[in-house]
Image (cartoon, rainbow, N blue to C red):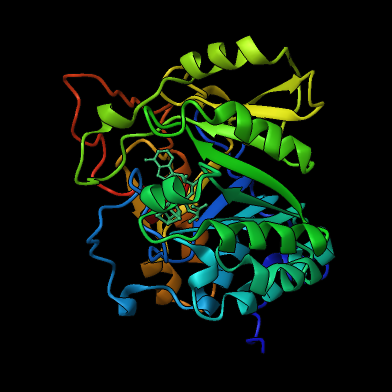
Length: 349
Ligand code: SAM
Ligand code: SF4
């Protein structure tokens, strides 16, 4: 199944390139993360409360609108698209969107189409993703202990996720593992996770908990500075800093004992904003210029106001000029409440 694809500037032979998206700090925006749904089949304790109020389905952009919006960003110089959520693979019809967006890979307008997933649906979709030109996926996995996995995700099943990873690798997808470091939960297991991931030829990135959205608990209870995790891993592994760049905020080391790559995403202890090249859109078409700030622009109205993209491009140009220099997340005893009211599942991780 596919839907009619709009003609965009970059689809038109000989079409003039549009002015690129460059923010006031001379950072070119080449990376778009798209939350295709705020819904999820898990309820990870650091991401969601158990009883979440999700957006009314009628507020969501259709798959056609998501395609048009993503394609407008590609026309404005975005080279990498990441579908995320919520759980992107629970959005109904998601493969139609992937198939449609893959045309930009074929024309060379896009370097990479990828996604971040909890892995629960990967067994079903891995081969199809690969057939549409997806080469790599990030899979979130914080523990290899089935009981702990259930406790962290509330609803998840470790076996299903591992089966999803098996299927992804069998389909030829490169898998990177993302693990959130959680105080008192998986902090004693991080070394084993690294060994496991590297033993399966997967990079792994550790992430600090960020104060996004009310989760019905205290962030300070969860927050483990990665400086501490890294020092502990240093007792077990020799780690050499490397230059590996994925277009993301992770800083990588090579673990001598395993030969694999280990990344650290440290929004709390080390600000990574100076090299930020990305923006995010929600499944309702709201553009967030920074994950850690409230400022946003509605793109749904200009998208729906006209079949041509002129209003949309104007809204993009205007919004990028407001991209802030950086975020100011803090978790300490005085800042137990979320820094931002929206959950990670709204803007996508
Ligand atoms: N459902 C998919 C998944 O879990 O991979 C994609 C969306 S999820 C919001 C993206 C990433 O954000 C996951 O790796 C998750 O662990 C991470 N995440 C969610 N809430 C977080 C928070 N408060 N702090 C840090 N990372 C968070
Ligand atoms: Fe769902 Fe991903 Fe959030 Fe977990 S981290 S609740 S899998 S969106």
